[in-house]
Length: 318
Image (cartoon, rainbow, N blue to C red):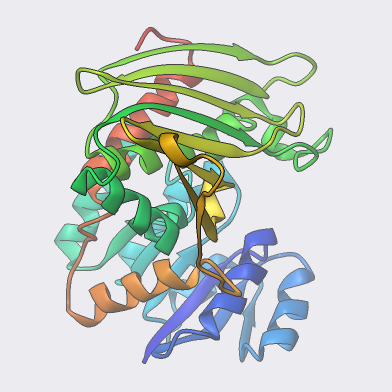
């Protein structure tokens, strides 16, 4: 049994706890937060220990694995502190805010012999695996073009800490849902990237449009916004047909349409109660096998994503 301690009582923690209950071999034994929400979650999910400081959780000898899910600019400190106390660590996206912090964190994990991974549920979904198989096997011929429209309207109210410029608004927390997702599917990062951003009333990025080139001939147009609600549809255009996916970051359905039979699309459904279970199964297997890193969410993947996100956040040419 891998015993988990949770840093923060943020919104995603409740979903994490719901998924944990569906994965054998994982147990949450402690949660640390200064808010009253931690006690509420502990009561709802039968967590035995509630701490009012993170350090008390790190010192708990019953905790094998620390899940970091607090405010973005505290991730790096929490990762390093947990590793320093000889804990395995998984951290919500964005893993950290600066690329050099990725290197420092993974170097410490290696020296400690502890598992470290950025959480990225989208790459472990059955829908994603299905789509990757279509791409890899050329089932529909070569992939030619991708469009993505991801929106999170209403999730970042005025005054929220995510609207602070350095926290990144919609871009830093959710840019990985485009960059790491495409990297997983296409096996590479973009060769060329152009972008337009808006900040408008808030200090942080609230809308971004990306044009990217992968390989020699795969063109990607991606939009990420907190300003409006879009259709949240991603489309993958191949030589023989196209694939549509709704909300790729938590997708449960894939729609495949052939160009010569557009009246009869094929629908593939993958229902689940909590989409985080697939990621958690991967984490459990890696730690149980004594690994210190994932072969899916690698140090290199996280580093390159954080660097690209940081470059765009600082409006550099990429």
